Length: 247
Ligand SMILES: Nc1ncnc2c1ncn2[C@@H]1O[C@H](COP(=O)(O)OP(=O)(O)O)[C@@H](O)[C@H]1O
Ligand SMILES: [Mg+2]
Image 1 (tube, rainbow, N blue to C red):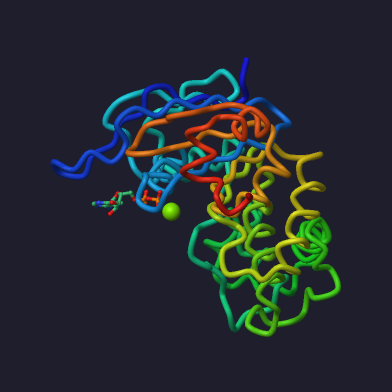
Image 2: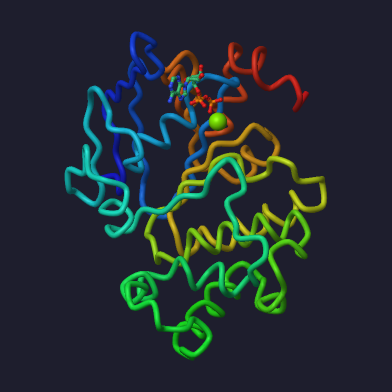
């Protein structure tokens, strides 16, 4: 049984149908890629799968439980986490605090406004452990705004991991990164996959094909192909339309 499964997801905004019929099955421990042209509905699909939009049709299950229509915080608590396509950090705040703010144990206590973040050694240690997973332990006390673009992307992933998920959704993690930072991110994803199930939208084919176990191609709100990277390469339609940059 897949760890995460979406069946026949539909989503429209007014009369505009954005997701016509999207199904997706993600095995535990795998990296599942999603590709497709701009405007295909990929980000909308992530919004639906993580509860930010309710679907108009279809079902979503995680670990055997039906999670269709649950609110984002309920879904997050079950072990599903995501990063956003747009950078989402507190810039004037040090890296470790960005992670602390996302820790479930901080969120529980945050109602107590008198509690100061840096007076709690357990919170700091928990956040440092998450930063170590993305190789940022040595930058823990630097402001997010002082980090390189690649480090900021790693910090965003750390913020997603702070919730201690089983599955992480990443929306175009390489966007804005240069060649070297993209290579760094590839080795990070290779390491993270030993610990997490990963679903990622990605337009960088080289990156995606090197990392993904399976890839779903979304076009016009539908999955038009789903297979291994090798099989997709051999698919003439995909090769012609989307893989030009690899040739
Ligand atoms: N909240 C919304 N209201 C209306 N249309 C939307 C909304 N969100 C996304 N769309 C439309 O859905 C389509 C797919 O967008 P998106 O999911 O962001 O595509 P992708 O991530 O594949 O580039 C676009 O045409 C976009 O304008
Ligand atoms: Mg998008």
